Length: 455
Picture 1 (cartoon, rainbow, N blue to C red):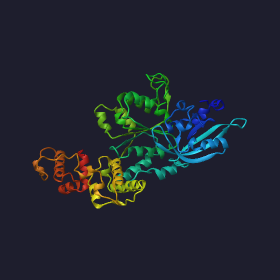
Picture 2 (picture 1 turned 30 degrees about the vertical axis):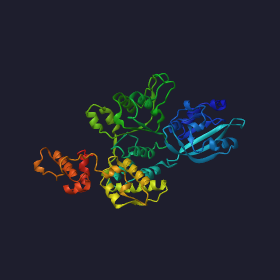
Picture 3 (picture 1 turned 120 degrees about the vertical axis):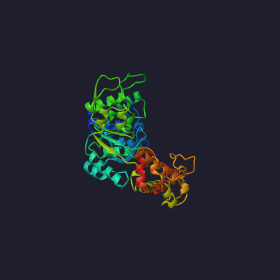
Picture 4 (picture 1 turned 60 degrees about the vertical axis):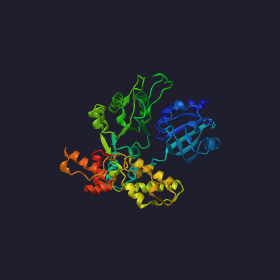
């Protein structure tokens, strides 16, 4: 496809566009991409070299593309337009966007293309400090003392630029916390790039993070900039950091120390200004002790630490989240489901949600789809909730009461664990009844379950 020579030869165009903290694309008269800035590369996941000469609607996959005639009308009429919409990036994430479209002219006043400025609507426009105060917890629900402590610490961490390590079980919302920290920081209008360190083999992950030069390996037919360069001036979120191989840990440590790195196969260092937020469900201290994680990297990542409590630790939040998600899915399905029956609530209250908020959300979605009345009944819940917890192995002999402490050998930790297991066997896995047998409150029992690593 032919690219307009007038646009192609604008001097220092790339440097000018990269200095603007919004996504920028320039289209020619055929509505094909001429160039994009670094911010738009991060937003879409496509680099400029890949996008040049391609119809814009294939790169900016939006609900206002040329098929809707908006871009074409701007080119023909010369009238600037601002319109709300969205784009779907190469990672299939939908991003709400404010599009600003303006026709470009040459020195004779003839139209030569369209300038598109894309602003992320999920970031408040203007006063960043106001955004920090009001939306640090946007989309993160909870009113328990445990989650309130997290919210307070988040407001502090958002105002710093140091590395953050987020820990917590799978499904606790580490991804949402990381993005909230970015959007409430001074880097909010810069890219937020997420990389799953456990999703790719070592060689591919290195290229994904640091990019590669042309010819670096078989199949490297083009240069790739990598996620660190796409995240320049913004934040890179490294989830499942505990899965990172030792060689890549060395390279990441170098980036943290020197703010520069070599692309794969490259001989010229690349400098970046990136804030790193890492997350893991593993105990990195234990990984260090076992030789699987570098101690120096652990301390560089663990400058600031934020632990997300498991759902069963968040007193009172389970019912809040159940009602919220049920209402959300009910509306989406066009149903009028007002809540759960008492029997359903009792079943859900006795469940420990090992999958945390993610599992709770899935349960609410399942129930909303299955429910045929205005309240979710026990039969509308996933079937596995109606059976004893799978982690509690049924005893081959008839259930017995907890064994007296004096007849159990071992240290107190082992004694306490055996008492809990016996109580769970006696109650058939019902944790409320087990707590009653032990003479504890339910919260105390759940805390002990976590202490003894009983699922």
